[in-house]
Image (cartoon, rainbow, N blue to C red; front, side, top):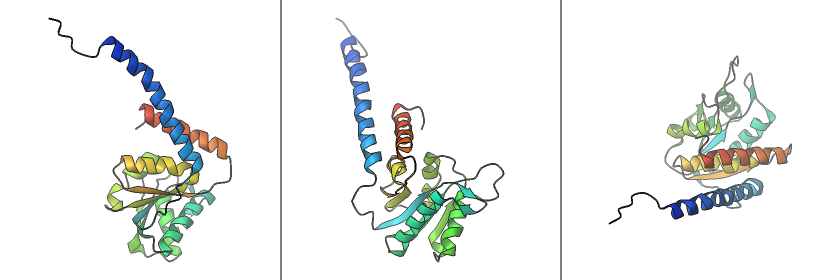
Length: 195
């Protein structure tokens, strides 16, 4: 009687053949999602918006960051969301954080501080999500970022267990390079090189 434990060689060969094909299929889907941008479905209503951090200069948001904050402000003013969480740390030597600068920017434009929260230590997109979880609540979340980054940001939020929708702010500069960087990042997540 032959008791064989473990996969048969033929099954292993099939798995090794199918794994790259599955990865390619996933990445093609990722590329379509990245380039197509946010879905046409309405992200409203949601409990909160998570604004993904971007550069700030001594408390003044960069143009990219300001566009994201403006989008979150418009969602808040329209009644789509109840709260805004801004996530992002700082660079060595900075006196302010992305999260803090974003919250200050929104408060200066009339958003009550009771509707704002800052996460001020994240350095990556995955950390933006993970370190903001305790601030977001249990309801649906709208992830606000650049249109080409929104796919990955919402994917990370869903992977963390959030009911996440995406809201992308269209960028104009270097769209091809940006899309390729996003695809490379998604490939790294899919392969398991980064968590």
